[in-house]
Length: 296
Image (cartoon, rainbow, N blue to C red; front, top):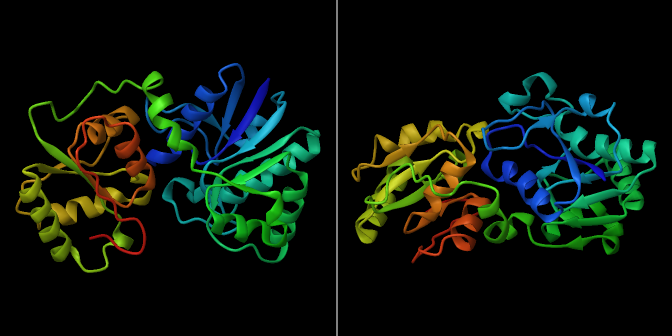
């Protein structure tokens, strides 16, 4: 069976690039076309994607939307999507659903997140999708409420599918490559500019404090380069006293995963970074997470 799987799998964002591996591992007897706004492969061990235009001449038997935080009717500011900014995200759900309806094939909503409320035409499209889907699930209650509104009873709320990473990813990725070596005691830090609301100096001091308490060297990792994570790494590094290492241009998904699971702690705002730290690492003694309006 040929399945078209839609998501933002074509940009350097760690969690999004895990979803194709997860679904292929869960459904090994099916063939997948992974579909993204632009297409291509952002890392050597990320699976290759195609645009929806490239998909149109393919024979497909079903459409799967998600996961990832991909449901939005708004224009995107992501630099990778600058040439398709107005329709990059709508293509991933409204375009995907239209394809399924036109071809009269099953449509599955596989636990994506919803960025913002559906209004006007987007709300009407969402209603059509809810009524047309053979299976519909979201990764949190808020997303279900935003998308389904009064049709919430039709939708399930299930965990983000990366939760299966511990069982599935070791079979898909080479996790033996620890770029920092085994002799260095490290803890991984992931920062997003929007979460650092108390200022860089404050965060730098807090990270230095954690480094001292853990007797470990910080590693600042750009988990989401498509969101310019590397820029805050450069800014915070210059203010820290604990000689942080940086992984500002990860060479692969495996490199990010290996760094997290070889560390003694994870501090960050990436939900998928936390899942990897919690679910895969058998050696991590402490796990720290700040996920929400601010970090530290």
